[in-house]
Image (cartoon, rainbow, N blue to C red; front, top):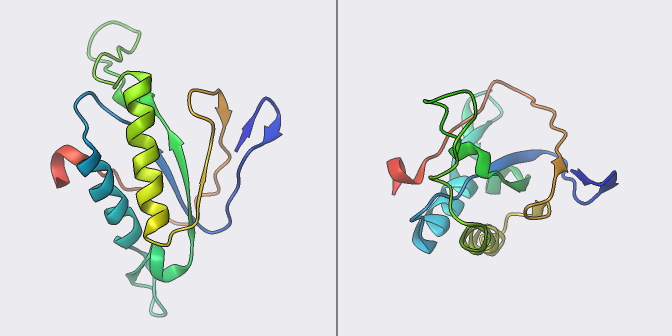
Length: 137
């Protein structure tokens, strides 16, 4: 990941987490989602079955703050972001998520909150999963 042409973080194998924080999201949700991220069995085992977690795989997490996940495009041609948390609150919850993921033993790299980041991703496999705190917590 780079900001202003300078690499600020990178990982090898693992996951890229685009983390959107909405109004009303709580610390408990951040902790729960971090545990879910670390323990979801989304990597292949020796038999090619998705039975291995991020923790078990030894992979890392690249966590990117992404308020645009809350873009509402139901009206007009410009997304509205009224459901996204305000920056100060979003940053606090984002940092709690990152801290919890690290405390579980996952190596974590991040970008720079509110910066224009260029994220390069090599998607090795067909796995993209949406985890919504409203649906799992």
